[in-house]
Image 1 (cartoon, rainbow over the protein chains, first blue to last red):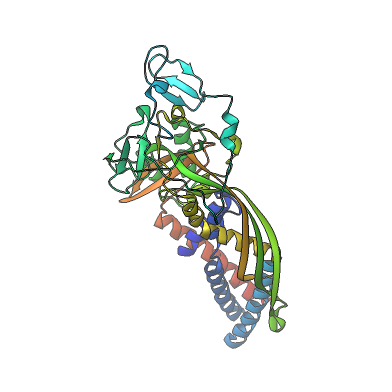
Image 2: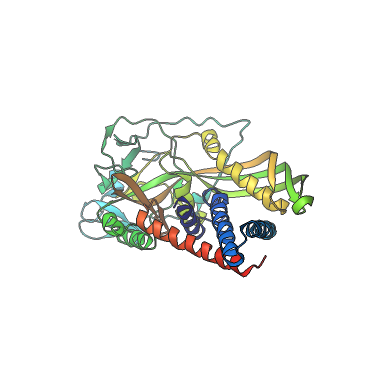
Length: 81
Length: 348
C-alpha cells in the first residue's frame, strides 16, 4: 500500500506543486520502489502464465528472465528519452 | 507592526469613528460600523516592488529594532504573531494552539506585502473543492474538515535574485547491456534566479510555498501599511539576510543539480560536484497572505493552506486504508493479469 500512496502523492504533486520547484522534485523522486514492485509482480506472473501454458517450469523461468531483461532495456531506453 | 506602532487613527473610520478592516474584494478599508470604504492606494505603490542589493562579503549593518507591536505567542508551536485591528484571536493561525500576550522582541523592517485578494468564504470553498478531489481519502474527511478552524495570516517570506556561474563535474550513462559505461563530463552554465521565494518562518514549509505560491508577481506588492493588516494576523521578520540565504541553501542546491542534469541531457546523469560563483544578490522582506484550515483526523492535527492571492490550495491529507487496499488490489491484479497473459502466450 505504501507504493500506492507514493503513486497518489506523485500524481497530486504533478497536478498541484509548482513544476520544477524544490518541493516538486523531492515529491516525485523515489519512483524506484514503485517500479521494482510492479516489475516483480509482472515477472512472477509471467512465470506462472508460461508454466501453465507450457508445463515446463525451468523453461518458463528462463523465458521470463529474458522477458525481464528486454523489459529493463525498453525502460532504460524510455528513461533516456 | 512595521516601522511603527499600528496607527489606530488609520484604522478608524473617518466618518463614524468605527473600526475598519481590510476588505480583500474591494482592496480598501471597510468600516465595520457604517460600511464606508477608505482607499489605501497611493502614488508610490509601485516602489513596493523595489529590491535591495546584498553583498555577502560586506553585509550592511541592519540592526533589528522594537516596533511597538502587541505580540502574541503560541503556547504550542512558539509562533509569534501580531493581530491588527479586529483580528485578535485566542488561537495561533499556524497550529491552532492557544496564544498568550508576550514581550516584544526586536524584528526587521518588512518592506512590502501582497494584500489578501480572496476572502474567507472563497478560501473555504477552495478547501472543500481540494478535499473532494483527494484520491483514496476517508469518507468522513469533508465533514471533519468542515468542523475545522480557518485562520488567516500574513506569512513572512524573502524574495531573492541572484546570478550563478556554475562549473560542474558529472557523469552519465552511455550504451546498453554489456556495453553500458559511465562517462565523465565537465561544463559551465549560467543560471539567473529571479524572485525566488523563500519562507522566512519555520512555520511555513517549502512544500506549502511550492503548493500554493505558483503565481507570485512583484506587481502585486504594496507598501507595508497597517491598513492592509487590519483584520488579519501577521508574523514579523526575525532573520538576517545571511540567515535567509542559508535557509534556502538546500533547495537551491537541489534546483542547481536538477538544472545541471537537464543541461547534460544524457541517461542517468549524476552530479559529482559543482562550484558556483554567486553575484547580483537582491532581496526583499515581504509578507504573503495565506488562509490555513486546521483540522484533526483521528487525533492527528493537519492543515490545508490556501493562497490568499489566487485561491490555490495544498495541504496535508489522510488516506483511507480500505480504499488504499482496494487500489493496491486493482493495480496488483492488473499487473498480474498482464504478466499471466504475456507468459501464457509465450511472447518474449
